Image (cartoon, rainbow, N blue to C red; front, side):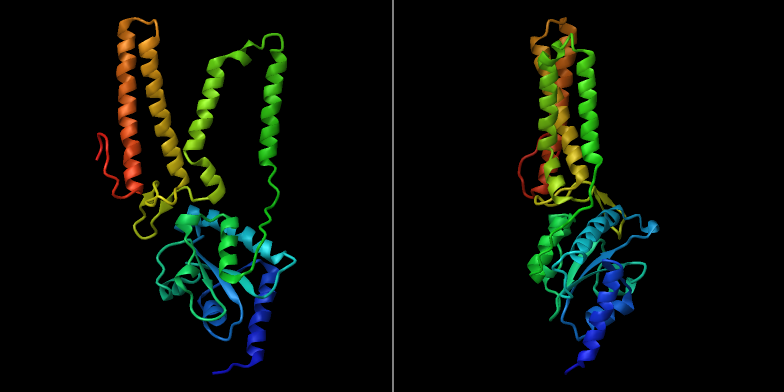
Length: 306
C-alpha cells in the first residue's frame, strides 16, 4: 500500500512547526494516532508518558519532565537538528486512551517509536535502571536512532555561589581567629570531617549525582511508596539517605564501644556506653543486612532480623 508524498510532507511540516514553538510536542489520543501510529512515517518519535496534573501527585514525573525538556531543547537548538527525531509527551489526563491502547499502568515512561515497524523491547527506556538524567536519555536515544545529542544545561549558579559563601565564611572565621588557629590542628575535627565524607560517599551519593534517580517510587495503582529499590542495579535517593543513617548509627556504636574500653570515666558510665554501643551496632547492622537481602534476592545471611 502506497501513500502520497504530500501526506508525509504535511505530517513532517506540522511536527516541525510544533517543534519550532516548543521542543516537546504535547499529544493527545488523536495526535498520537495520526502522527505516531498511522503511516506514512519516515521519522522517529520519542514519547514521555507522564501524569503532571497536581491531583496525580507524581513528583517523579515533574523531575523527569525537567530532564526531558533539557534533552529536547538540546536537540532543538543543536546545529545538527533534523526532522529525523521528534520529542513528544502524552499526559494521562489528556490521553488516557493512549495509555489503555499501550497497556501502560505507570508513569513516567519513555518509549521510542521507530520510523519503520513497531517498538521493540529495547525501545522502552529502563527508567529504574538508568534514571531519568538528560545525559542518560540522550545515550539511549543515540542507541535507538543514531542521533547523537549533546546535552546543554542552563547555567546553574547556585553551586558556585554556595561554595563562594562557604569559603567566605571559613575565611572570615580564620581571620577573626588569626591569633589562635590551634583548632586547625585538632585531630577530632579532621577525623569527624573525614568520617562524614566517607559516610556520604559510601551511601551512594555519587551514583545519584551521575544517574539522577527519583527520590522514591509511588505505585500509581496501589499508591504504595517504595523507598528501597528492588534491584541491585539501581537505587532511590531516599535509599541512600537510609543507608547513610544506618551506617552513621553503626559507626556511632563502634565509637561508643571504643570510648567505653579506653576512657577514664567511672565504671557505671562505661557500662552504659558499652550497652548502647552494642545495641546500635546490632540493630542497625541487622537493618543494613535486611536492605542487602531485599536487593540481592537469595542472599542467605541475616542478623537478628529475617
